[in-house]
Length: 190
Image 1 (spheres, rainbow, N blue to C red):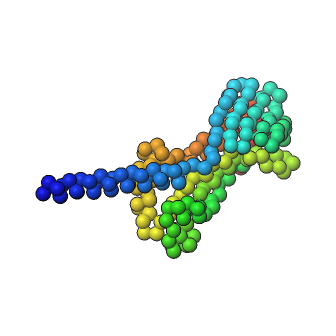
Image 2 (image 1 turned 45 degrees about the vertical axis):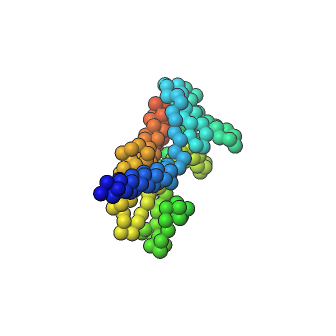
């Protein structure tokens, strides 16, 4: 009887360890793509943000902004900005789909895992777009097992291993708009 209890305890321990490792694996697969947005300086004179694209600097007294990327620097007057564009697109996460288990229902659009991409771009009056932020969040979809995926997502979010990408993107958008408004520029946001 004692031997059976020991085997049962070992089996439960192994199952728990497997579930823990599986959740950590999903946390890695589901982690946010890109999404860097750090406000470096936010004063009456300067608004400086570091993103995945580079560094965005808004100089309020001179009413100019510059975007410094590894490819170079673009400088424009704040009045050259026609609008701020916030977009949401989604793409099929086929690589993650194969890494987490592929089945025939994954060929149906309704059950394909998605990556939701959120982008902030400055639309200039001359028609150019200057991207300043992008972030992608993984959205798993499963046939008949969505309840299980929702449970995993809930556990990872409560443990702090899964970021709210949509909320992060909207927060970045609010900070960008506030940064421009602080200098007296009310950039249209359609």
